[in-house]
Length: 256
Image (cartoon, rainbow, N blue to C red; front, side, top):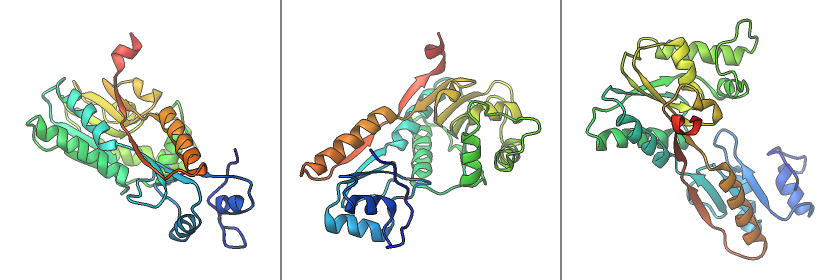
């Protein structure tokens, strides 16, 4: 196993293509960053030379190589449907303003759940933060809250923008769904309201604090599926496309 970056070499080949042609590797599992898959030139080379290749969580649509994606719409729908049964308050969905298929699918799932439950359309609160600030927040595990004297400007700015978007938008008794892991906990600290219930979508263990429900990506299954897929291609099989559904967890059940 070799870890390669998606960095261009002097000969024009990115690291992972160069490693393949040098016979250092037999196949590639590509983990996208910020929803970016292989560039168009690389994708053409992969198709031309039939390089065993699988893209994880890139949501690239129909491509001539393998893929493993998550069904973010179904995951968001399940969490929102269950949360709406816990409260009659209005639904507020808090998401970053970044435009990716993942964020689009999550919002679609939230809207679909509201429509099926016969509730009014959700209030969408978009936080105008960029990938750098999101990454800074993710790197702060397990804090996820304001730290006095913190010098990480990206992290602090994200908290500032999240507070600016949420204060005044949240009301007592709201049903709050956050699209980012740990945001529910932060929202309760920086924009407190009474009687609200919370859930996180893009979630991990941090979301067990302060939420009624949270979703969890099947990352272990995704890793195994990627390996199975790339091995199938290495041994001459056709490329396949796989979609895995996030699971919904009730926090109280896990903590009891």
